Image (cartoon, rainbow, N blue to C red; front, side, top):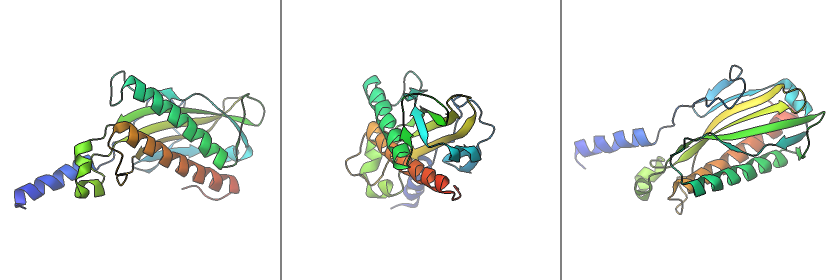
Amino acid sequence: MPRLATTALLLLLSITGCTPPLKQSGFISDYSRLVQVNDRTARYISPRARDYSMVTIDPVESRLPPRGALSDQDRAEALRYLQAACERAFTAAGFTVVNEPGTGVARVKIALTDITASTGWMKIHPGMRFVGAGTGGATMEAEVIDSVTGEQLAAVVEFASGNQFNLTAFSTLDDVKSAMDQWARITAHHLREFRSGDTVP
């Protein structure tokens, strides 16, 4: 391959494979406690969060712009999928999901705040797929508060990309769902660590 073409391809991969900067949508009541863990995650967890074993989970909100990478139908499907992923994450971590607030019950609020569109033609080429070029993703924000007092117990802003090795995922919605599955697995793992007294990075 000519040097110019090689340089152009590498530049394209470096642009398309990068992680978008984390944004604050205004959904979380207080961002000042969040610590940047890496370029994909900023989070805060209060030591008091360990005292809670029951949660209520609000319907997932959309903080996406009116026109974006998903159609209205796909956007509604993404919100339903994220709701189920969040419920799985907390159940897998040993929390009891309840319907009413009360003493010892934490309220979980989640929003889908940004979507990175996938580019199907980039994902066809094995080299591009390997580095994640063209793979879409989603940014979620979540906050956990005491359901009675409103005290902030935890908050997170997190970007996750789709699985670039999924040979059947060529749409933005597929990548968004894959990102949500990944987010749910990571969240459940960290919640289990935290409840057991281990350090959450």
